[in-house]
Image (tube, rainbow, N blue to C red; front, side, top):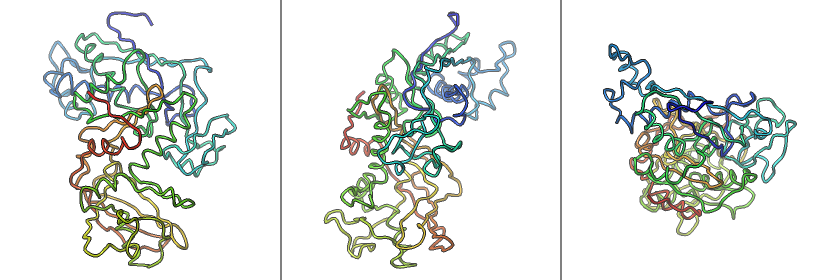
Length: 425
């Protein structure tokens, strides 16, 4: 492409596989529609303070002759339709050798400790954050979800006639690429990119200064490009330590309580929803739950009467795991018969974006705590139902999310115990 004063050129280096719904087509990863929409929202916020009157002459469709306003104002009021007047173009590497084989994505429970190949010679990443029921899909099946990873940089060209927009683009694009991943499973490190010849950590510090994120933490260990399996195993292990904990059925010594659980237990009388649900199941059918290590009294490492609260404890049960992202359902092992399935619902909330984004840049793992994201979930009341096959234990039992949660304080306390260091401003 011929360089001109109206065009900005960037080079995006892909860091991790991009999980794309068009994974069987050659080439596509980033979509301009996704990239531009996210960038427009950032520009509106930081360049124009979300004020229509400041931004209108830089919007797509603005007519300088008559100052066309009404239709643009309607679109502006819906932040998902704020489109600034610039054009983007992505040029992907075209040679086959510049694109790695697609990576098949596994789950924490599948293919422990192995990297294997299917008939397309695609690597199968073991013990990665859960994705799209791949543990139930045969390796040779055409529905196996995959990620695409380019070795060579992707060229991004942005054309605009507006000097102010070019300035805003130079300012906001590094912040956007530092804060966001793309494609599916964005919060768990997939679809991570970075800009060549720019400092990622400086962009992160700017995000903190601008109030986009509360803080950031980096793992001191650096992974080689060929160590993607180990990298995603690390992400999966650390995330489970933070949110759900470990309960290895074959090795009780590997039991670890969730750090989110201990955070609330240390600061308050709040305990998590799993305990309450187990108690309610036991009331309906005593002995149905397969006993495993689930210590409520962490001081002595065991429970009195197993599922019962100690006398005088007066625990307050809350849906604390929702603070780090929602799950439609989860399961408990039973002493006999099928697993017990617990479904979670809310009349107005179907999805809640994780308040944590895990970025991977130059072999380093970074955790970013998004600002104000948990404000959308605190205090909300969800309904829980438990069943085993055709047997229902209970339906629509309400459990509320805690009303207060300081994500930055939580991560500062517990990520450091997992080997992470905070990025200071």
